[in-house]
Image (cartoon, rainbow, N blue to C red; front, side, top):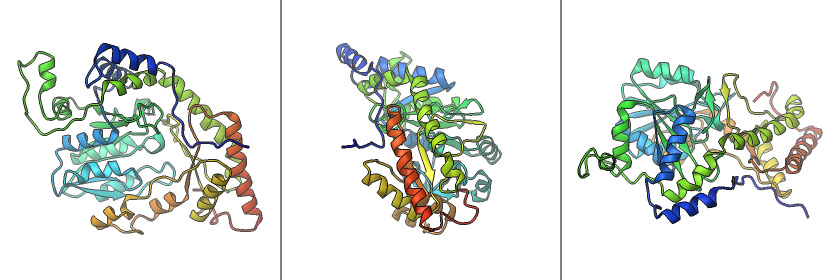
Length: 394
């Protein structure tokens, strides 16, 4: 009997238990211990980020970022609709309105050419999302933001160890958010980080993270007691989570290379299907360096995507679609959006399928995935059912 192939399986580097045991033995299992600090320092050094604050999740990091943007009811924030709910929730929680913009057909990132026309006198920030760890056009976005006096918050949840023109994603905006969720490349079950690149935001970011207190100054001996000085919440992860995470971050380059092997295998093996116009492979612009977070294909239409996903499931292969565009959701309707408002976003979302992609997947399993995808699409083409519209290219 053929074993099932999971969609994702977190990589274990070998030192996780050792570091967790050490944290327990030290008696420091709460927040802000040596493992938390070592993770932050490692990320700062690796990616040239002014200040990294570890958080319980990327959601928490985005919520902190929204607070640091000083969003108020009635403010607007520009973002793609093709993103995880946390990007919009962070804004909505402040009483501000997410303003959804179409995505590009190549990278599936926000279309930077449409941002300017979405700006109003109520716009406070732009939240670009680096989909599949491929960078948005950050030069264009930063130029618009600088000229219009807007904050830039990078949703780099998928993009730890990915780069734009040799600069790390998460280091380019005023603020950035990372995720170390179980589904990401480098994990601790649940976890994240806020990247603080603007020096003027660092002190307040630390206060917000410490429940609105100046406890950080107290711990450094800068004040003789700490007290409530601002709004905030408990945005600090446990030392146990950070002990696990450190073992992952210490092997960030080797884990990335393993994922690169998976990505390259799929690209090479599925290239004939792209040449036959039966699917489209991911696009990575020359100035972008990805961390190979995911491997997706775009099918000619929604029914083909759904039938292929069902076929793979019958074969014991787990594949998944991705974001349902936020503007089509019930919450999107509350902000005045409806299906049909962003047709390209909706079209691409309906056609996207993610294949199993993780550091430990074997060549035999990848070969089986490719074989089933190929046999399904080739058989479908032979039935004379159209593979897609004329000139199908994604």
